[in-house]
Length: 352
Image 1 (cartoon, rainbow, N blue to C red):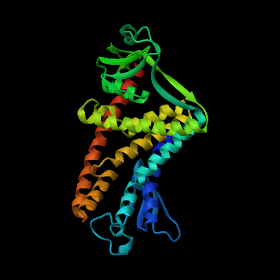
Image 2 (image 1 turned 30 degrees about the horizontal axis):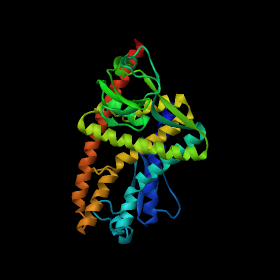
Image 3 (image 1 turned 180 degrees about the horizontal axis):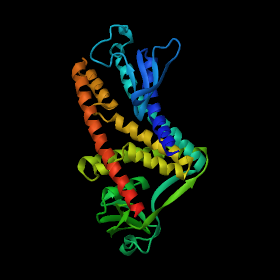
């Protein structure tokens, strides 16, 4: 069942992204050779009547693609010029390229709305709910109902960002600025290091107040609130990866996602819905980064075209995207290697 859930979760996330590209391409009358879910060898394919597109399922559920006429440097003479990507207006090209990201974001908001509607809308706060008297936060002087305003001088407004900041400090001593009875004071906490399934983790020893609301309006507010929190998390993660506060070992690839899907499935169906929303935000955000091989990289070349008034040489652009894709695959191998090492450590700890 974990394998089935894994395929469904990744499949839905990828399908939504590629559907955005596909529908915009069709709307712009761009010739689409293939709409594929998955990578690698084909397992299944079909064509609809009076439709040029081949719809396929491929062996590895780690991505997908929409192959359009005009993406490659070499022209396909069998396709009418007006049906190639290059012949379309700047806006049509930009919308087709960015539609996958837009669809991921819209779908994530819809799913978060459903989560809030079914499960209640949980708004995390930075107010301390309880402090464990056996852990460092208690001995440092943190108390129930303290409102955390800053961590190491940096303001935090949501529980999600606070938790990410704690992770980014990687077990180092932190200074929390709290509001206690309308008076600000600093509290220094050095976390306790423990091993969980063979991995070093750090405990501070406090929990946060969560406000739960019911109803359609609250669910709508929750969907946009949570979407904003997840986007801010992604911004901080990318920033901290660049400056070295987070390591590549913090990231997860397909193996790590499989483990997360398995754990989420055990926690209930609503957790799988939330996970799909979370992955949609992740995939959408990563794809809009202006780097080669990503949608954002292609969009960047379009913006350059708009500024200069002439398109970038397509052969040069394709070479840059190819290099970016190779580097991306190398990164995926490194992340997958880290996932496997984590899995082995966990298995070893459980066995012993």
